[in-house]
Image (cartoon, rainbow, N blue to C red):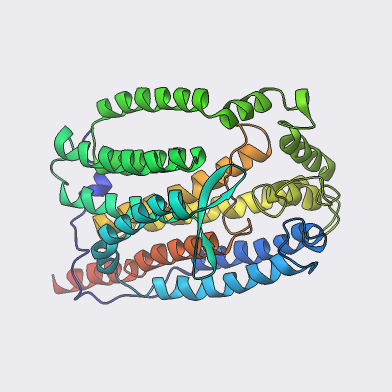
Length: 396
């Protein structure tokens, strides 16, 4: 498949002479609204487990998780606004370095990483735990966009349109499998495929890639015991409600208890030491229980509006690199929202996927808001594009 029409836009991302406009206000407001609701839900979902100090870190402080999330949210907004100030030339030049750092951290986490529930996915730097897979996601988007722009007329070939991308994905996914982190592997492979597709790689190669990834998934499920257990629990969670099916059963109880209008903010019953990861991976279940079907749908509508606006910014971006980066980040956001909701409702096997802006986690929240800042940076060039067109018409 040849490069799609949008990608045929001239590449002006290295032009520093063009002035920039304001950020996209609808996208900014939607992000801040979702972030505000998310911080409130962390308080509501976490105070029971924080009070009982289940993870031996809160000291019985019921607002422990909320206070930390609020601090990171404020810092994240500052990071987002700062990221929106840098032109895309900055991110393009930095993309290879970010990729190298992400690979180095993925290698380091295998040696000095913190082990939780049998997996090494976190590394402590400066007293703060970070998940290198989060950095790897944005690294793939930024560097793949750079490669697509570099090989824009050669993306239909295997040497330039497939091989360099496949090598990078193989290295990153191979390191993730050693942690193991199957959900992050799936997300990064999907994002990589999306970037290659919109970049103009031939459809033929995706068929072969799909076969290869499917085979890899089967091998992973066979080798990794926890993966096969989660698939069994997904197929029939009520077969073992005390062990493998416990998480999803409690999640379904929470969702069902909420009904149409919910029990009320702060009134969840499942968060009282029944539902595991109630302020993290399963916070959407608490949302359903407290705000009901209507509240959950309204939040999903806000996410949908944010995603649609992100794609709108991508389609109106000034250059090809902005289009690719904005599409990649928006797709990443959409994938994570869909997968998290699917896990909570047992549409797919249970995996460790957080809900953007809602799930507790300081470093992840900072990364998500930094990514929103990059999209806002792309949006700052859109008004200038319109001004240039008007100027050209007047000159004629």
